[in-house]
Image 1: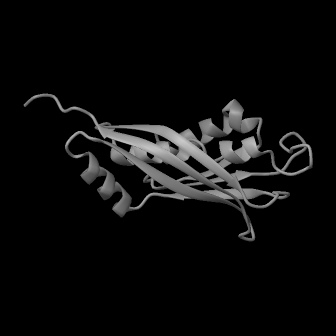
Image 2: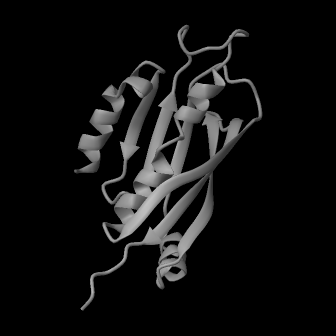
Image 3: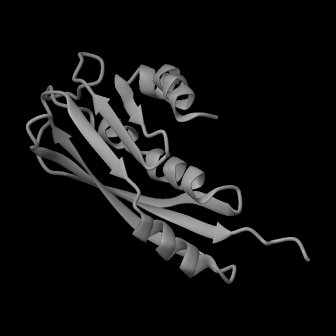
Length: 151
């Protein structure tokens, strides 16, 4: 599937659609993503700021999806763990930017070359357009090279 098509599908996916989450960009090379969450009456909490579950949901699948596509079909990639730190109340649109670089891919390939599992923490900050950090999210991914058929 091409990134542009997946982006359109994700924007219609009920958990994102009904939370006000929009995937603004999925890089053509699967190396980046940009996600937005606008504040609406239906996605705020009791005190009128972004609901924490929506802040977390906007970051949830992206590290796994990007790595799956960058590494290819020879690897298992799963989310293993996550944590979120709420830094400031979010009263306006917020954004999360994800980037995969060559160094990360090389480290994963090296660590899994012999068939070992590899656990890696990946951070992302949720920020306002002006750069104020609203939340810090860390996701741990599990990666393992699939067993190759005998030669």
